[in-house]
Image 1 (spheres, one colour):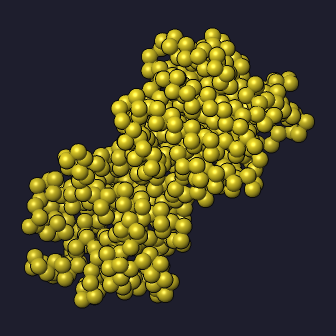
Image 2 (image 1 turned 180 degrees about the vertical axis):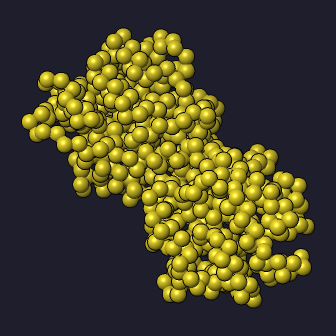
Amino acid sequence: MNIAEFQKRLQDNILVFDGGFGTELYRRNFFVNTSYDELSLTSPQVVTSIHQAYVEAGAEVLTTNTYNANSAALQQFGIADLTEKINHAAIAAARKAAAGHPEILIAGSMGPAVKERRSAVAEQCRYLISGGADIVIFESISRMEELETALTALTDDRTAAVISFVLSAEAQLADGSSWEAVLQRLQSAAVPPAALGLNCGTGPETTLAALEKIIRQTPYPLIVQPGSGVPKNVDNRFMQMTTPEYFTTYSMRYLNLGARGLGGCCGITPEHISDMVRSLKPLAAGAAKNIPVIEVKEQEELPPVPLEKKSSLAAKLAQGKFVRLVELTPPKGFDLTATVEKAKICAAAGIDAINIPDGPRASCRVSQIITAIEIQEKAGIETVVHCCARDRNLISLQSMILGCMAKKLQNILFITGDPPKLGDYPFSSGVFDVDAIGMVKLQSRLNRGIDAGGQLLGNGVQTAITAGVGADPNAIDMEREYRRLDEKIEAGAEFIITQPVFDPPTLLNFIQKLRRKHDIPVIAGVWPFASYRNALFMKNEVPGVVVPDWIMTAMENAGDKDAQREEGIRIARKILDEISPEINGVATSAPFGNVNTALSLLSFHGKRK
């Protein structure tokens, strides 16, 4: 496969690589005094079985068992004369596992090598190509000397190559070389790589920190394959943090940053890859889909209902009034009595609407639609119904919107949703027919009386739904966040609710840049912490939430639980005081269902200047 073909494969869809190989061999009782590379000759059935496990997990690239299969490295076992046979046998073992899967690529693996072994690495590269590898991958490059060895081996641009690096959190090689120095050297390469990668390292967290620093300046597609890393000290216990769910969570962040290939390295198993594929492949596919363009006769389209006539909340936003929302999560059971009572308390306090999430954190709860109907009819307060793409196909999404209109649930927040693996039901499948952008486009059509198939809803029939979208001012890749917001607004979004913000300058910078192009109401997420442990959970476990160190220190030093709750409210009020002149409203939560905590914050009346 040449460079252009491989880059197109990366461009068209996320490419899933496999995980660690040495780890799997060790788990099968081959100890470290064995030449793992020779096992492709002596135990090919074992090598093939590991590849097959990765195929079953969903890997689309199988990396050969040839990390140290160059003559210089094999010499210590006295088998340098078998170098060509070992490399060819390794490719054959991988190819056998991929039988019946023509889409799977075989990547010939080569480990790092110093200057004295350059000829041996160049020889191995030739053997891998002659043996039928689709691509070659130079792994774990941590020094400029090793990069030179890899570039020396690249003499044929007919086979695509990946050069993968081990970087520190500061995006430096082990010899202190910067990423800028790496890119500068690659500019003068006789044969350039098709893609670059990050692999191994001290775990997913370090890899994420490095990716954040290099993604914007790297002109090559990036493939991210972290290792499981070293155990962390948690309350004086050393724990291996990289469970499949932990690995998947970080893989989602790599994807959101712009990685085009995802996989793992040392310590990452087929179980990790399976979980990643289950969660991220549908998410990536949904983002790539779109509502098809269907021609509609101009006279058939109805003009949308003006914002101020859609709902009470919409009218307040249209008039520039400051709105206040409280989030109430539907219960896990089906008794809505307590939820309705909390909504009544909010209504009596003058809250404008109740936010109702849709299966937050991929959990199973009573329908947010039923919850909203009960609240609006029994508590007399409007709702903002969340709708995520995870659980519904395009037909079901449209039916849900029409049902909302039938019951006068006329404020909907469209979100893409968390992959199922991040919740309590990892065996569940995500749908993701479309993402949030596609859902807003669908809503925009329905507001004009046209369904997703270009059919009329009826003579003069149209929805009057106020379409909201989420935004993350803390996003790692803000360029991507602004680009997606542009698309959401162009699709017809009418208001924004942000992720919880705990650093006012971050939100103010976000709004300032957004308003250079769009005049759209922004409702800021401001959540009071109920305790120090609550703050710790939000900081460490909730993707997209950034909690500054000063807040963590203040919460930790606050005193007992009641004092911590009061400190959480005080901090939230301070944040709201600083941002209120620039926002159109505030959306807060009722931590652990305590609406009094939320109302203690919202009794503070932020006003726009």
